[in-house]
Amino acid sequence: MYTIDVHAGFATTAAPGDEYYLVAYLLEDGVHQGSQYDQHNYMDGDASSPWYQKGDPMSSANYVHDHLLRQVLFTQGIWGTLIPSAKIKAKGEFNVSADIDMSPEYDLNKVSVIAMIVKKGSGAASDYVENVQECKLGQIKKWD
Image (tube, rainbow, N blue to C red; front, side, top):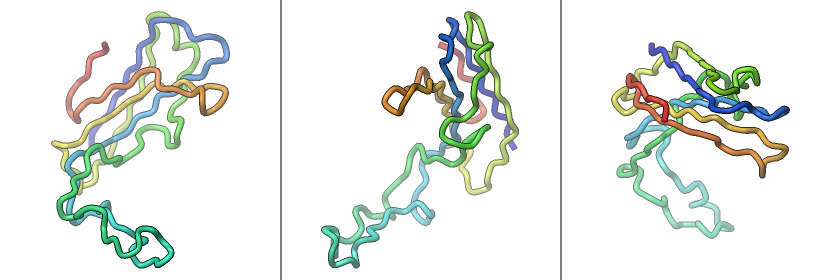
């Protein structure tokens, strides 16, 4: 069990109507052979596919997954946790914390947390990541 704390600080006030969200993920590096994430060509046996009888695209025994998404933290879903507009002001701060149960299959030395502040626009083309930080599990990432 780990307590994950994410702090977001703000330098300016959000414009009226702007929505910002904190999105956080638990990632793991070095996940490979024997895992449920091995690569496979599922069209190898489909004669109508251009990938028919091409075999697997890479040897699953040698492929190592880095930044593999293990868990969505805090609020589930694409948008994460809505940041109250009252917190988005000069010297404002928004904090989210949760106790996260780590699966025994995780190599905790290779686990990190990535946290993003995402601005939701009027449509997908205007959504964007305002800021993003990554930190190894058990370490503290200072604001920059």
